Length: 367
Ligand code: ADP
Image 1 (cartoon, rainbow, N blue to C red):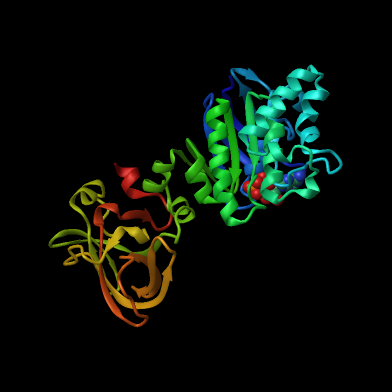
Image 2 (image 1 turned 90 degrees about the horizontal axis):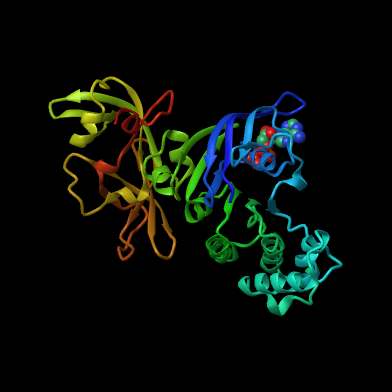
């Protein structure tokens, strides 16, 4: 049982660099929480503070209502898995997994039972006599997971554990990690810069930028209702299409204008943006939020296909619209040609509208 709470926690390194600024966050018991953001935004620093590997320089870090700021790492009931598996090269897989339990003087029979149970759930029983040098990257990472699992910690910390694996293996390891969370029934905190990984694994995601939290929410919240332009841009593949322009009041109500390109806003959206006429905004359109067969009378994007980007299950096209390249999804079955002119209808209900300067999502903000 472990709930972790950050109360106005900050981290200033000895050189004066502020890696984490005033974090307020309560990680619930048994939650799978993902810290997501670009390299250098403070994710590992935050995780290392939970592990007791980095000092908290401001605020209070608490496990189940007890402050742990000064508690040494070995007295915290946490286990950690790193990107660089950190296995002992001269020990067998069995001995690597058993090592932590033996150090803590667990009885031999109990060590054996736990090692074999972990190996079975990670499907590495047949590898127990091998040494790390005789394993693939994915197998080594499963050994590292097994070593942390057998400790049965109250908190399981993972720092980019899949970054060294190839794309296919990353996807199958995500499933392993998700199953692990379900079977261990413990609190997981997971660091990644990979938005797809975060969306797949998390109960909640914390999006960070330069030491500052941008948004905390479920994967659905973060993807569907991004708090700002940074969050919208960081999640989704291909990235969201952003166009700068102005909100203007016309005969048919509020619309968005950028040069010759004009887009009427949905009635509900207009209501949430009352009083915003004249405002400089960026609209965000996700590739999947347009439809060639939709009603395009007042929400059309016309342009020439510049590139074809089939990804197996989907077909995306690159197009020049409103003076910039944008990506859209079209029917997978549709035959497309570079240079072909197409008209696509934007799903206006799913349009994101951000203040151009602050980046704040005006729909969410004014709702
Ligand atoms: P992330 O895990 O998101 O890539 P980190 O938490 O590792 O980011 O680092 C956050 C910021 O703190 C970075 O700008 C990094 O250069 C800086 N940083 C990390 N460790 C130290 C340190 N020991 N001394 C000074 N600055 C550091």
